[in-house]
Length: 138
Image (tube, rainbow, N blue to C red; front, top):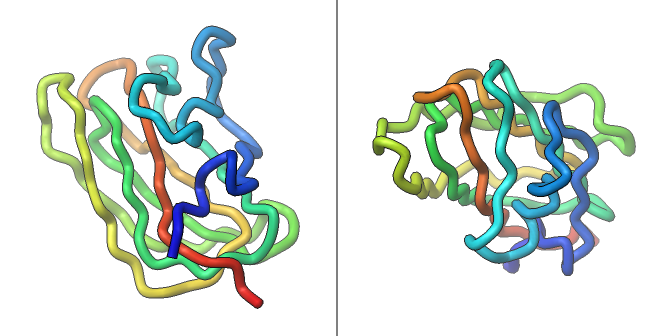
């Protein structure tokens, strides 16, 4: 198993609901905590991560701040459509400090993962890093 959500592993950001050229969404898959993707003050917000092939995944790790309610969905289609819910997570309020969560999911296959931030503890949230343990499906 390795981190299939890294841009160096071929992962790409297919869609985001808000964009700031100073903090591009690709920051969440660059492998560092020093960069991040912020959202505007409206909810829900979403980010779709696409793999270069079908992946078998089993664990999602997210480092963020001010996230309250998160839903994670998957799609096995070639295009990012027909998503199914994998997990829902309600975070504890950490007063703007880093939130780090390991979200175990049943082993499943996916071409795309959608992160839907349903609400936050503040008007703005940030996603610093997303890691997904998995392997390419043979």
